[in-house]
Length: 337
Image (cartoon, rainbow, N blue to C red; front, side):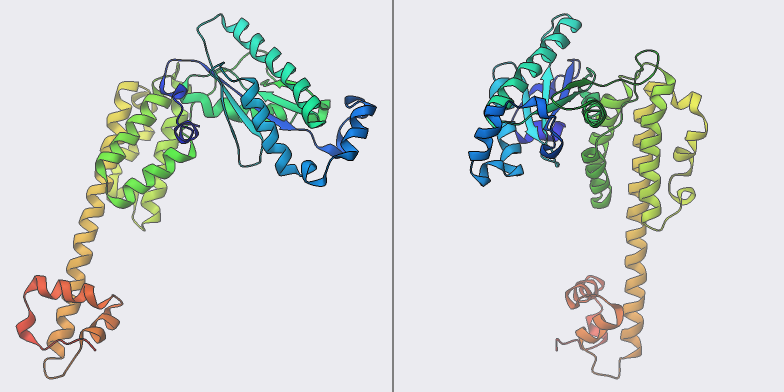
């Protein structure tokens, strides 16, 4: 969600303590639209419309245009998700929360009338729960989940998210897929500064807002799992890389203390990056030993750089660079073939 805000050059999600609400608006399946939802005159007019104007992609794009225009000036920003539905993010304006929610609800109801009038099609909306910046992606998932209820209750509806429980239930905050991707890339590239920056983003958006140890455990498990998966993907063992840091998950009481979490994740990141550097140096030394062994065995032969590179499964420039660094050119004659 934050990435979408950046892409659209909008600033609402830059305020971590502000409340946001996500609604997902989507056209109802035409084949299943209730017969009473569209008047006879509208049906007749729809039959006359060019085929291209009934194209699903055109309709979805038109719906997004209508949503953006209808809520223009309200602080709402919108975009289309990967399924073509329109996602609308409403920032809180400091008013009473119930009044704010009612105003958004009624705004979407009136929007549905505009959609029916302009597109001759019905649309339904799912509405998530209010959340601070770190939980906007949770509100988005809730809105998508609520929208699925139209298949049970019918079309042209505004459906708020419900837990199904006796009362409201606070949900744990988890990072979005973009943060996970960027953190893995920073580990892969050895960018310690970027990795620590992303860890602090995880801490501030997911750990600081947690109101209980139970809610705090979810983002901790997320980070623990991400780092463990990365270690295993490299063919390493957790015990060999960051045993003490990642074993801390066994002491939930200690990890439940928020002030320790950022330092805990930061230490684990440092251990992983240090181990990766050590592995690179060790691998380079092994490579040099193998290269020099080939050279010494071939002193009485005309052996070319390409042949050495082929034996070591590397490119000739890599072999040449390492040989030059070792200043061993006087041991043999290398030439490119």
